[in-house]
Length: 319
Length: 247
Image (cartoon, rainbow over all chains, first blue to last red; front, side):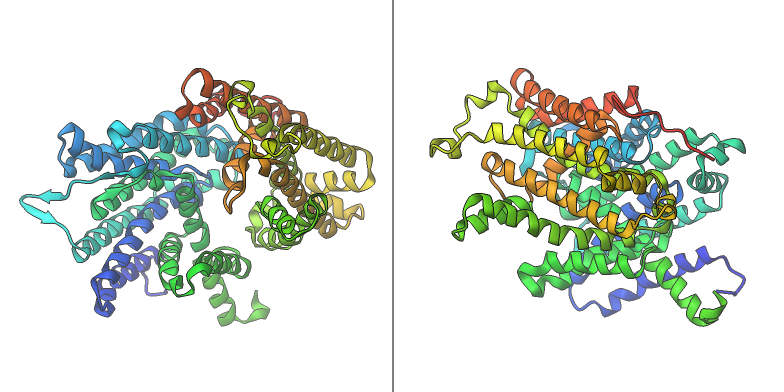
């Protein structure tokens, strides 16, 4: 870590190496699919981490934005005649605009009030998606048209693995760079103390709103990718449980750590696959693993292990 | 959830219903308090030091469980009730609704008396306000916290038991109820037990009336929209005190 390069470079480099080398160990297309799912979830988690980890604001309705992105690429081609590649940025813009409009009053709230307001927002989106069955197919979900890029029909687990990995790499790069900008520093400052941040001239409301919109756009893009990859989408993806899952990824991996969000997403996506051998007890074990991880690595997996590693190296007396 | 399910199971095993209910509450406490304590210890240290945070977690958790029960009672709008054929009522058992209302009121009274009239309750409030200060005046905060989690689990179980005859039971019954209970408490305002009751009742009534008069598919949407609008106008709920951040 002392090679003269910023730590954020190492996060990015490690991620790139992981994306490139993991397929060498994949024995079947199924692994590519799980890998692509991990990268897509990680993208949403990295975005949420900007809001939760950097700005310190909670959102329990983030799956709502995920759902907007997913349904944008489903409804665009099916009902409005917009091609999928154009629906994705349109969905992201819609999610960003919603976050901008609602974020202004919502982000004035603090703590549990903020949690309940974002929760309400997410539930509202999910209810609309479930009930407007003329547009969305209702609780049964709807088919998503295949992505066509210049005559190339994008399909197959392996293709989507590379696409999701590439988009995640860009997303992580942007998120890492954000930490070092004026916005990133402002977010860290208001995370520590809003009063102090305001005292040094930071427009707290504006920066919170910015983080909220960024997180919403990330979630929307991730939702679009998932919908295009699966070719099918249900309102569950916008539901409360998915919101909680996204928050769990960020907290489990380590609040404020971009690498942590990716690790958290990887754990929450792959662990259920690995635990299927326990059949009925799968969920029980999943909960147990998460609880134990949080009890023994309080700051989350990545910061927790990092601190552990450092204290081992320096010795217990030095800390 | 544990409350409702355990009652059904224990009662099915031949234990009389009231005894089954008591056993179920004990089971919920037994599962709830160690699990919650482990989770609490795991909480990031930053959050634990934040006095605001404690305040919410220890005391208002209990209050909002109760609010959930009241909300459900409020949601039993006569308009909907008449159409409902209750399995419990058909068998000639007493109607469950008065039990829900009465139980919720009993829990509220007990909670009020405990927090306001006993030394232990006041110690709990002190711990909620500031854990360090409470420890300095000789309160065993670890015991108090275990008690708070335990009683919160017990109240949750009571709500589950009371509501099971109406909603039936399943492994995930709690989620939506807990969400709405939480929302109701927020609507009323944090730190105000009366607010929790009124918030819960209002939410239930809104939901029931919008189901009857507007659209039954969007009854949940109306409930959450109400909360959003109220919080936009009154950021700390209907009865919450304005929070001032001390620097």
